[in-house]
Image (tube, rainbow, N blue to C red):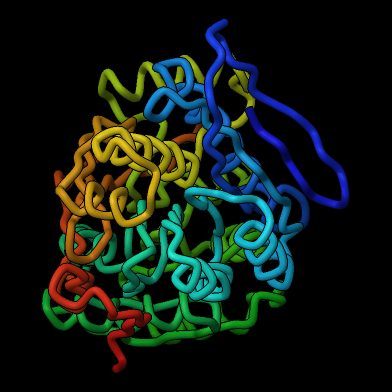
Length: 401
């Protein structure tokens, strides 16, 4: 069951499929259901609904029905802190699933730490979040870029240009690109970090032409992503310069770009709908039965699905939804057969070992997987963050120091 609380409205979704009366355990959710980030938030919320229904159909958590108290952050950072405080003070939740941007995560992470409530962040991101109460089910930049830069150098050449947004996701990812370029014998020949409001990429394209790279690592966010890719293709650069990304397709950008712009672009993420395994086949069947096939499933939706099932497995293993017991179970090395392959929660860093897929955009607004990197470890997070040895550690580590 789900109570969605947004602009002073309450709706109920998800009915129990069993006739047996069950006690309830509440979990919270804060996603961007409206506003500019809703292309991600709606799918995250849809995945949460399906996951909770799946858990409840299987008997709930310790025999209790899971009920969601959900909030629409409306793509506004201030709403995250407002609703997080409300969820803690009023709703009596046992866990929270919330957030897309790193700024939203960093705004609410301290709230759940202080309240001692497990918080699950389910989005690809720049990496480095370390907190006893926080669990990250999306892939980190070091997981994605470690394989992507090596692949790009081998397939396009050693001269790299960075085009990214001017905030922590872009700038920290840029640092990792420099590190992996040096590791694989490549060179960053230019970089441009731009405000999210930029829509005219002519100056950046001119810089790229002047730098003459073999490949552009393009990380623009939201609607700007489409604009850059279209303008890059229109300038005739795709024939001579490769384009790779760690977030192209994360919001189904491949659906809205023209075939001229999207075909051949390469993305490295933790999930694509074209992943082939039994868990993904079953997941897509449930998703399509509920939501149809008009919109491909994004990685963030699978990250939420995985988070809910890992939390439920931990609570069932612990025999309790009490926070310390659940965290201890989560830190026992739980694995889950997920749509993106087997995922395993690292006890020390609270990040997942998971597959990373390199996929190429095709002419049907989709992706063809070209290489799979199995069981990629969150190496940087494991190195920096040992919450077993240092449970009081609460920091967002960045490679800049």
